[in-house]
Length: 136
Image (cartoon, rainbow, N blue to C red; front, side, top):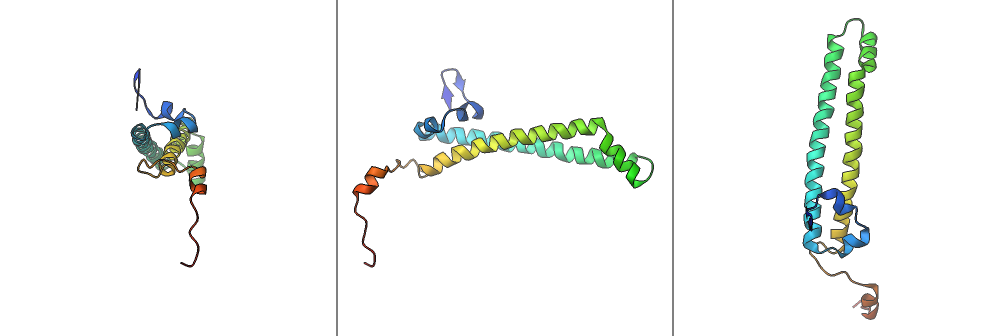
């Protein structure tokens, strides 16, 4: 998607209203969808990498700790560094969820249009056409 200032990323595209997305040309809507989807996949990969790194750091802290199992578990849970990293992962998850909502919204717009740019059918047009009788 482009604007007078250059290409838009996913966030400004979705800050538009649902009506604006509905009126958006199909090519721009599809490019916004693919851009949002690409950002979602990149951020999900980064979040999953951080989550795995955090799990590895927790396991390493547990193994290198001294004392019994309970003492080592308490030391891992009390670690400020691991707590900070856990908070970062939670924030990444929140951002990822917001991006997923944006992807789903654009996807819904595409599906409501028929997926291939078919013009939307208005209620007045469908009411004007007679219904086919059943059983024939």
